[in-house]
Length: 610
Image 1 (cartoon, rainbow, N blue to C red):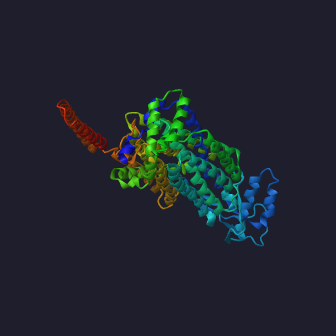
Image 2: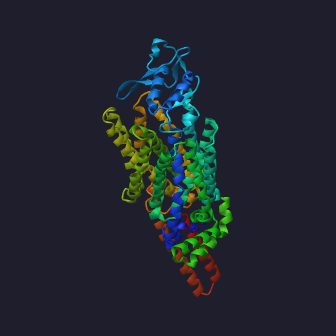
Image 3: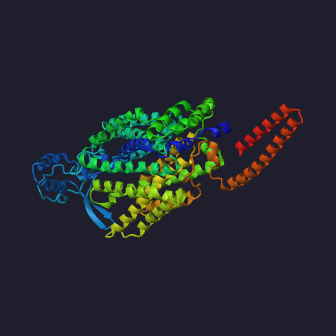
């Protein structure tokens, strides 16, 4: 069976006639890239959906005074006077020193104490109690957030982190679920299910009655958003040839960055979290029309033996690119239909990624790199609030800094550095930049730390784009999407742990940065152990993928193949000579011909095995 699969026509062979990235592929690719915008907005939406705002205890005895404050132009001053009477001050320590701030979780017990402006409450009571009548929120910037609506403060504060972790868990589930689904039923069916799902569950999330429902919907949104982006990425890279894979793999990342920046713009214009959630979710349903516009991946169709549909799609490519594919190519595709049923019975699975030794080493290495890149990427993204200033501008800049990162990742993997050394350079520089921030003074020279952090994020963003392309090239077509899905699962584990890394900074502040920097450097070194894939044909079978990267063995096998070829040629020559002599002597012609045919078949069989 492996010999038959090896003989099957590869899509890269067809692309020699169609063109590696013709006009038709470019139009399809642009449409596919648009699908990355929705997942990008949902990925970082939590920054605005659950934005934390200043809050303090609601004091029912002073309710009517708060209402009167709205009638004054100096509303902030009025509110400050009331807070000064009802809310105790607490010490707060930051990098620049100590200060006093109003408590978020306690208030004075002012029962039977009359209020008037400027009254020193500490002369009448020092008794404080926990907030027992809810909270009041500063709504000057955010009119409504999940943080405010569900009171995710004080004892309920961890519930806010729950929704973030649930979204990351959804990305993990979506990577595996839709990765397997895309390899089984096809890329387009899978992506349609994901697009429809993200629109439905995203809309439902906007009407969540409580934080538990919101978290569950965020999990489902994460799963479907990952299914959308992951499958779109695979479709985009599978429609082009070897020399254009980096362009296709990185190009979609630019649209992801645009989605990030678009989120900042929408959040600036829409200050109510549930309306923002609807604005991100409902438009995703538009992409369902792609099912009738974008054909199924011809690479997947050929690799899974669906030759009839593959021929139809290839003819669309041929017409769209204005080229001519020889009839012999279509004849060969039709001939492959004879083994279609056998291919269906022998489909590869995710177990094959770990079954064979060379595949296993590459897979574990890839998984660690995905884990690290995601851990550092999301860890640094969570710290963008340290920039100060406008949240909207910070988010926009955080998305904008990825554009030069993706531009970098578009070119350096195509140079002599290739994929491996590009991963090494970006991950090591990113890790070193993170560690250097530990030596920057925290007060008065924040811009140096910010610059290093942005450099680290730029490099790790470039690594993220490169690892997507690198992984797609390492895995064979039958398990490419599930391989990408499992790798993405490892990335989501890193994403889930990233917020926890930030939290352990309360135990020892430098620890998160040390973890981010060291893991990134180790990942860069390990990337050098992977085989180079620049300008190489994608492996189409498990057998090809297992042999790919066996350098020493490959040299020995090549030499052995040459020797065997010489021996086989001599053997064939002797057989033909014997047959000719027998013919001239007038005896045993049929036997000689049978012997020649049988031996030639054996020679061909040996060559195929080699």
